[in-house]
Length: 344
Image (cartoon, rainbow, N blue to C red; front, side, top):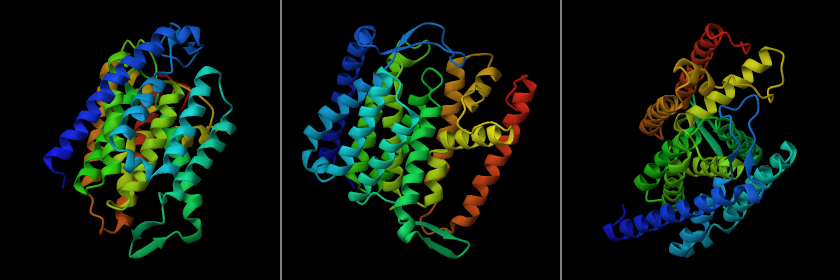
């Protein structure tokens, strides 16, 4: 485990990331209108005013500028991973400034995932299911691409309420921090802890009513960071555990896509029928209460994920997770019908 001196050194890094994030986000907010980083409300928005976006630029740069200074050798050993993260960040910034096509974002995420494999961040097997060990072999890279692309976009989809994406991300990153701490994985510790520090600074601006949004520079980058940490954590936890650790974005994405498909619409069409929209209506449009509820729900799922043993047969766990999704699909469908929504 970590000695006290290394822990204190690491916490100093996190503290400096917090303060630099706060300062850089303040600068982005101040000059957002001059550089074209303004979010214009549409029919799906929960806000009515033109609001600065691109706070992801602030907290990402804080991590990128400070953490490698504290841990140069560590980050130097993950060169391809850093290149991949930077590519995601750049496409996110471009999207914040002037909307980028979905195809372009997909291509960049796929390319970045391939770069991760060069640092051996890849899903080579997915555990044992009902006594059968599933090794992916040649399908390892395609499956990793599918998983990383899916989750990166899943986190982007829940970025719909003030403070929600940051709060959910903090809970998930804290879980990966715990896994890194338990297994003496410095890379997981530094990466997750640094982004937690940056997000805490961001929440000071983004808690309802938000004065700035993270934008795709934040949500895409965070989704990719969490996805790569999830892949990295497979050395220590069962693959199905990851579904619990990052449950809310995954469950929300599956539910809305299945509902759209069953209703004869494109699975990628936009609407206001995400879990956070349903819960906000349930809480009488109280955004902070909705965010706290979903954050606590994610914490419960993450806690369950941490309890699962690496040696356990994952078939029953996967079945339980699928049943959980089905129950929630029916539950939220009933709520949408009661609320008079046209989504169900």
